[in-house]
Amino acid sequence: MPIMMTNQRPLQFAYWVPNVSGGLVISKIPQRTQWDAQYNRRLAQIAESVGFDYALTQIRFTAGYGAENQHESVTFSQDLLAATEKLKVIAALLPGPWNPALAAKQIATISHLSGARIAVNVVSGWFRSEFKAIGEIWLDHEERYLRSEEFIRCLRGIWQESQFTFAGDFYRFRNYSLKPKPLDPQPEIFQGGSSRAARDMAARVSDWYFTNGNSVEGIRQQIDDIKVKAQQNQHIVKIGMNAFVIARESEQQAQQVLQEIIDHADVDAVKGFQHETQNAGQASPEKEGNWAKSSFEDLVQYNDGFKPELIGTPHQIAERIIEYKKAGVDLLLLGFLHCQEDVAFFGQEVIPLVRELEQQLMLELKA
Ligand SMILES: Cc1cc2nc3c(=O)[nH]c(=O)nc-3n(C[C@H](O)[C@H](O)[C@H](O)COP(=O)(O)O)c2cc1C
Image (cartoon, rainbow, N blue to C red):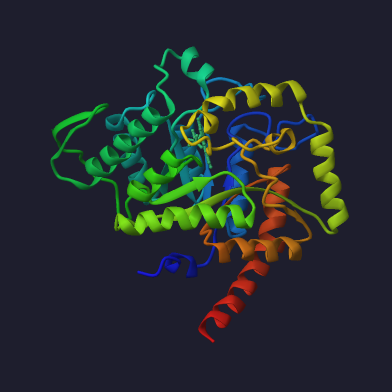
């Protein structure tokens, strides 16, 4: 199979659900984003009406950098599904607090409640103080990924096999028969990180690989690396990348907003975050994981969302998005400053331009 085959489909768009307080940037700039259920239901309805495909909820058990309040991801996802008709919602699951038996059962039920619109994002943990606070054992980087991979294998096995048996280092099942199974299509499994372990796991077991924002060249290298390995494993994995969007009528306005976000950075919170991230990317043996090369300014958007530079006019952003599509990105996971207004503006002004450019690209590819 050609390596870039999946990429000929229309690019998918997801947005970060603000189910934790403080918005998507670690900055004291005024933000109109709210974290309550009512705001989020409306946001989900706006997003699906303007062409977003997915919403991603976050899981955090404690405040770290801002985010004083954090709603739980699975229950919150179900609430958004109940408020929408076609949006797919990706619920974050953290192995440790969740075990696969409970997670598989919760998600199977939500699949029935939502008409198969639930997906999961299996996260592997980077926030040591959070684990300590809730009495969870803090495994080292490689072991966290071994556990996540077993977790994913168990989810799939429970969902697909009539009698599931598994003997791993972390989980055990004996002739377990989950009923009802999730509806078809089965819940998609996302998983994120940038380290060698995160990539290799994606190339073995995940439907989707999520990663932090990167330059076009940087993400191309990551994608090529993962797709070659996936092909060796006879596995298909799609790629989702994070980016923070500032779309305004003029480039100057957009750049000014970026500058204001950075000028108002919550310095102590960003430095606290910088300290915590040492347990993620830099803790991996090859030291190439998330945040391993992030500057102070990069960390103001906590998943390196400024790096892709989706900042400017709708035209500039749409053209840049096409560069990412050409590099092999299948989905953009987007963060915004004022979520409701900015999601609406993006959907109305940028997505149609992307669709036009995609048509042109398809014609060029066929020619
Ligand atoms: C798009 C995306 C979403 C993530 N969401 C969460 C989350 O909600 N909760 C969490 O604890 N970690 C989350 N993570 C963190 C990852 O699971 C992982 O622990 C982290 O990126 C470090 O990975 P690395 O050391 O392999 O690069 C997310 C990562 C990415 C890329």
